[in-house]
Length: 81
Image (cartoon, rainbow, N blue to C red; front, side, top):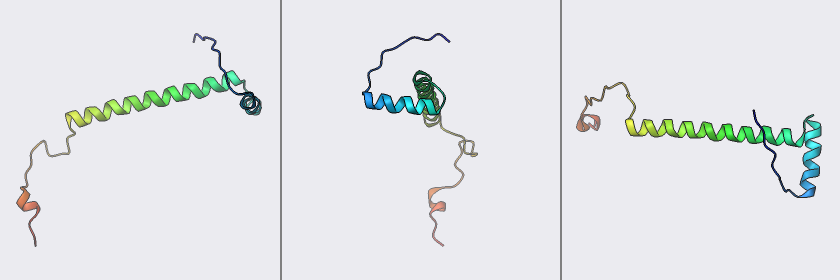
């Protein structure tokens, strides 16, 4: 995979804590940020796929086993015993 360097500005006190976390995880700040950003992209992609799938279901409808036929009338469904 091709990579590209970026410039990131964050508060110094945050950077110090990030470096400690990265050291505990035996990785670099760059590696840790890359993993987190890749996870974010995967989550967004999964959300988009699910959204398209559900929109399709709403537009096309889902077969509920009736084959599109309604065999019971409103009166029969609401009949009081």
